[in-house]
Image 1 (tube, rainbow, N blue to C red):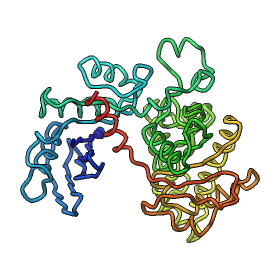
Image 2: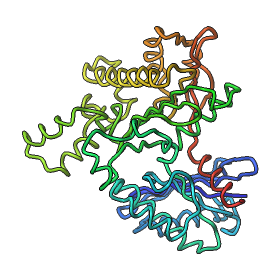
Image 3: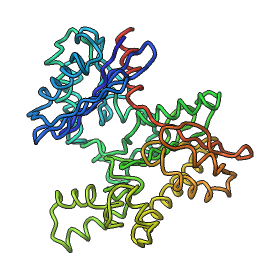
Length: 400
């Protein structure tokens, strides 16, 4: 069975074609700048690469580029779209409507559309991606949607209800949802496999650290808390997002600078975080290089990030009543060994010990334990694989 995994953004459409017989990636790529000037890149599992600038006015036109690449004589990996058994879509916001993956129906699409106010850029784009696939495949190929929020749906009320008037939860569904759930789900299950234990018997903290970052506490195989909230703005400092802050900061700056709600939203989401503090870049690699070169503000940004990670791990250890394993994943978590080292050495008071040599080696896709044999907490670096989770869920649903 071959499954096509789609991750549609407001102006992009990423994809992977996965052969589920051995879970190998046959091809992957990205349609970028849809509706603008357009760029398409396609690469195959055996190393062939096709890249071009091309106008794509909408997601349907983008999907046609994907289709043509997959079946092309020179860069294709299948002879026709008939070889695609199903399509799996990543959906950012499932709200309280969807606590698990489901097969696409018109009612499901309407449900995703109803949640657009909670994730206006993401969910609207996901619907476009679903409809683009339906337009090309029709109803002969089943489609499945996998929600980033679903893994976090096990949180108790005390963790997801905000202390604002309860009526806003009832009227507008204002609550903590959490994001990156597909990633947290993959690495937590993979960590349990590597430990040779059942996830239900492990108290685990998973750290998805990238341009967007979130940290999740897992107990009895279920999420009990996570750092992102109503939107992906909450939690630790990120590439361009503030993370958690005193709400009065928002109203104070808005009043002082005479900014609208939309302008404040832009500032908090796109001009803050690493970029806002360092003044150098939103990319951790650039900021780290600047810090090593003596840039004080870049060093401050690094210090804030590592401090935030440390605070969440510490608080979640208390919430869990101890911790058996800590996992680092995503772009920063998988590749910036200096951040992992700083955080883990600061956790030595609770028995965390890392092997510095192993930590240095665990980059660029390498997977494994970086904690020392006498560490009281196992520490792992696990490259995330959200697409594989989506493909597995899709196969499970369409072969029932």
